[in-house]
Amino acid sequence: MASSTDSAAPVLAPDGDDSAIDAAVRRLATLQVPRYTSYPTAAEFAPLSGSDDHRRWLAQLDGSEAISLYLHVPYCRDICLYCGCHTKKTNREDTVEGYREALEREIRLVGSQFTAKVPVARLHWGGGTPSILGGEGLASVVAVLREYFDFEPRFEHAIELDPRYVTAELAAALASLGVNRASLGVQDVNPLVQAAIGRLQPLSVVQGAVAALRAAGINHLNFDLIYGLPLQTVESLRKTCATVIALHPDRIAHYGYAHLPERKANQRRIDATTLPDADARFEQAQTIAEEFQQHGYVKIGIDHFALAEDPLALAAAEGRLHRNFQGYTDDDRNILVAFGASAISEFRDGYVQNIVDVPTYVRTVNSGIMPSARGCGIDAGDRTRARIIESLLCHFRADLAALAPGEDFSEERALLRPFVTDGLARIEGTVVVVTPPGRTVARVIASVFDVYLRQRTGRFSVAV
Image (cartoon, rainbow, N blue to C red; front, side):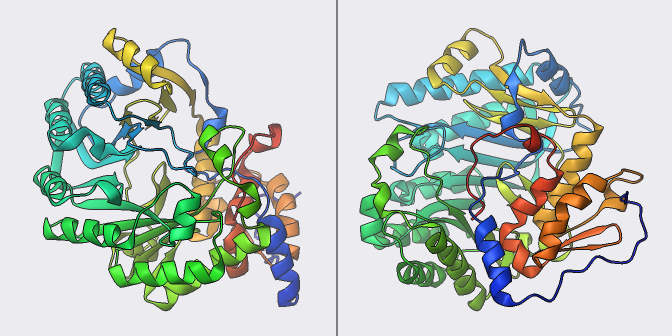
């Protein structure tokens, strides 16, 4: 049997016609596979009997290297019908204030495990709508973080924002906290689509949010778009892309809508008959890619675009691109410490996810107990496969001999043969290459190296 250390002649894809390759891609695009923002994925997390591992991994942070931080705020003023995030609706200020206080208590619980202040290179706020804490609330949390962490000069400070709630006052408050990158949930600018997903957001609102942020000096802007939404068409998405391009964001992320009404009650209000079918989703994803690349954006991995001078594009060009819980990133930090309900921390030896239910999270933290709920350890084999999967999704190639010297991947090489036959991959000695046509379904190809996926039938989003 072949192994990763073979020096055999390359196994090349046949010259098959374009229609056959297109048919293979469209067939694979309907498969359900993980997004691989981690490996093992969250589907492998199991309940924790205590927080011993979490505490030990935190205690090992001795200030010798900078880490990344993530803060999750699970509240929005309204819940969009498409949303699949861990978030709740609230308009009560006492609820928001109570959550902020719990978040600060968790930071102190975590910080008490350190032997010294830990340097930080990245800070990312996600949600939900983090700005629901208000300028003063965000400042209060940052002040507590500074008690236990040292922020490096010019560290990246990013936040996810709902354009409908971005004001000049909020933008100024964010800038005063050192926020230097903002991600706006644009999703789609078509009024009919917006009505169908319960997110009425006139273009003037998005334009106003962009203007306010740039006026405050926050010039690095990301936009999130979603395809596969009800009533979307290729033509309507072309118009959305043109509108977004005119606003000139640094980065764009486009994700396929995952319709899981059995899991998310809000999605049950979407009329499934108005959702595009698999072929239409495929065409929409291709349209988005065409539009942005035609207007000077560089394709990053499977679902991001960036201006050529953006750090993400430079990282991709230089082979420094990474993938973590925030998606594609130039963040090369090995450790991510996360705070808030449902937040996931990543350590060298494992993952830890906090309690998902917000009231239970708040009660637990207020009782002085670490909110560790689920997680898993990471062994050497997991690290190896994580590197391979990340390399395939970031660089569309993986040198098995370099990433896993001496390892035998004969089973995986056999599983890759159908992709080679379809013209979606090549095997050149010890190097697995995802061909340009195969990049659309790179998640499916990378899943060959996921040993856990072979043992379960969990529900994931479709590949495209």
